[in-house]
Structures are given as C-alpha cells and as structure tokens.
Length: 548
Image 1 (cartoon, rainbow, N blue to C red):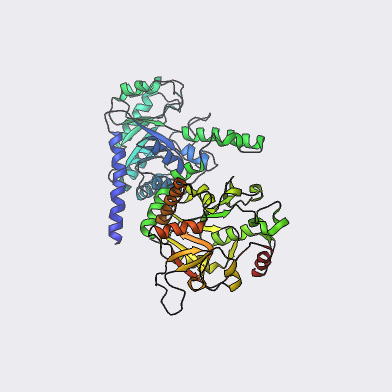
Image 2: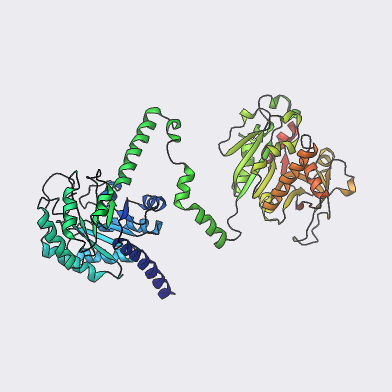
C-alpha cells in the first residue's frame, strides 16, 4: 500500500513539472500569474492561467514581514503546500537566493519536489536578499559560487522534470549587458533550465537588448513589473519564452482590503460595501465545498443528512384571550423563553438545519435569529395548508413539518427521523379521554399501537378526523411529521392540486393527509406514548410550564 501511494504521488508530481517544462520550452509566449496563498492560487487557475508564480515578495507581505528572507524557507514551504494542494496547475516558486548556500538550496529543492512544486527560481545575490526594487546597493554572488548552487539543486531534484530557473540580477545591480550575458551563459552551462533576466527600468529597452543578444540559447523569462507599458507583442517578437505577472494579485488585494476596511470603519455598517465584495457563497465555492458535499455522499452514506423544517405559526390562539393581544401564541413565555424558541431548539438539537417559520398574526413579534420568517398575509381567512403553501419552495429534500405551539421530548423527534417512509406522522397512542374529545387530529390507522408486534411492522394512516368513532381511534397526531425528499415532492404536488380545485384556502394539514390516503399514498405512522403537549388555551400554557 505504501509503495502504491508513493508511485501515485510521483505520477502527479511529474505531471505538474512536465506541464511547466512544456510551457517553458513552447515556441509561443506563455504566462504565469502571481499567487501568495491557497485562495489566490485557486483564483489564478480559475481565471484560466496554466501556471502560477509563487512570489517571494507577495508571500512575505501576506505573512506580514519584509521581503528580506524574514520568513524562513520552511514557512514559505508551508504556504506552497497549501497552494499546490488547492490547484492542479504547475507552480514556479520564487526561491530568492536559495535560502543560504548550496546545502540549504539542495534541501529546499528536495522538499519542493515532495510537495509537487514544478520549478524554482533563484537569484544571483547574496543571502539575505534585498528586494530588487528597493534603493541601495545590490551585492551579487560570485559566478562560481552561484553555479555550484545550481548544480547542487539539479543533483538533488527527485523529479527529472523539475526545473531550476536562474535569475540574473546584473542589470538591477548596474553591471550592464555584458556582465548579464556572461552570467546567464555560465548559469545555463551549470544546468539552469531557463534564465530570468530582471530589470527595474521603466522601459523594456535593456531587456529587449538582452533577449536579442541571448538568441534563444535557453528559455528566457521576464517579469515586466516596472516596464508594464511595453506591448506584450514586443516580447513575442524577441523570442521571450515566459512572462510573469509578478505581484498584482497581492497589490489588488491590498488596495481592496484598505478600501473596504476604511469604508466599514467610517460608516460603521456593511450596507455600502456588500454589493462590491464577493459573496459568502463565492467563498464557499472557491474553497471547494461542493466537492466535500459530493464526497460525503460517497463516503458517509446515511450519516450526512440535511434536514430542514417548516413550522406553522400563523394563528393567534384566540382561546388565550388577552395573553395573545400583541403576539401569536407561539411567542408566549414558557418559563422565561418563548414557546417557539424552545421548539426551534429541539429541532436544531436533533440536527435540523434551516428552520422556516410561517407567521401570520403579529408577525413582527416573531424575531428569532436562527429562523427564516415567511408571512401568510391571509392567515385570518385561510387554514394550515395555505400557510404551508407559503413555504412550498422550502419543501425540498428531507423536511420536518411542525405546528408552532407544541413541545415534545427529544426522543420523539429522534424516533420520527429514524422511521422509514416518505411521509411519517408522530401519533400519540395514549392521549387521555379529555384530550381525545377535543382533538381535531384523531387518527385511524391500519393497526393500533401494540407492544406485541415488532418495531418494523408497517402502520399506515387510514384517516385523520374529528369525527372518528371511539373504536376507530388509534391515537392523536401531535402536529409533527417528517417528509423524505420524495414525500416533500408528494406534498408539493398535492398543494398544487388543492390550489387548482379551490380547496387550498380553507384546508387543514389533516385534509392534505387524507387526500394522500385517497390517492393511495398514505402516510406512515410512528407511535409514541405521551411526553408532548400543545398550547391552545390557558390550561395548555400551564401544562407547558409544568412540562419543563
């Protein structure tokens, strides 16, 4: 198993390095775009670039340090690992001066190969390096010493396609064209796979002169940061192999972060910036959440359930009199918290994510941060099915349906979630006689509850009504149901049919379930034995307080 994994890693490593080598030696001009972390690397790939420049300046700045080797090579390596893991295109890393002598550099090369980095560029200056665009003297390494460093790197690479690019700083240091050509030729002879000629002039004149004199003896790379006004076609005509856009993602991010942070600070709010920045969903997308969701379905079957809930809470609760003068009954206080908050906590505690509450009476009184609120404006003249129809677009995938005025022990919802079936109703088989007489949700089932048959015995709904004779009553629906994805689709279809035949406005949820029975799709029953209650009047409110 170990050897198999190693061979797989080597295969991918060679693939990225070979891809870079193909770009480097292509007869046409190719381009690399700067990145400095996993996120920016993925942005570069998504933009269409086929290679990444891992800029030393950008990585240092992103880490909050100067571009003077203040970040160690192991810290840079950590960043590169994230970049390589986040992308499938090759990375050319800015290796500064190789982080020391030949020994440091050859260790660095080995580690880069292990992390599937395609190539490294090192510059012929002394360690610690000074950024080429800073004022001050630039001290160059001796040619022989730098050639030895290149040879050490080539001897140490574990991937034959790995490339080492030698960056010539003679023009930066003011040594002129002849010295630059002399150094480039020596580095090429030492084994460098390409030459990066660097300049901080505002025009490309000395770069183009070098390219003309070089005569394509080896692939030539440039980074036109300072001479950006030069048309790109000039590089093509001079035979330059690769153009590096060297630090522009970092600079763009810095400008944007300053702008957004300053505006939020001044305005003390987010309204002014929200439409100008990436959405949260964009962040999730680029981070690869879709891949993880797909992988979870493959590797964790049945363990990663996404269950939503729709809670119907549009009614006032007229039997509660003045207690609901300024709020719906779902917001009545039950031992220091609204009834609805306790219900939502029970749902989320069982793993339900995404609770939608359909309000009606005094909707402004329903203000819980963990819910999405929809409003049935016609609550006074419509029934429960019409309220459910307001949330019809939420009925996709697995869903819990609940009345907004119930409380129950946690095991009941757990039992409901574990019971198979497209539509499953929680039915209390032990409702007291007084409750049975006043309940509108009495159920008749294919089998009464019994302790003598096994739990896998299928029990289905025959009817749900207020008019059942005593010998047909098997229990009371408690106002809690589970829909599978197919069950949710069945309910949506039935709501459409009720809208078409004109029965939707006044229909209850029991009416909807009875229609499903008539169509040959009866809901399944999950029997419980007490441990729940609803709040319809002052007596129910008192019971709720005692229930807790």
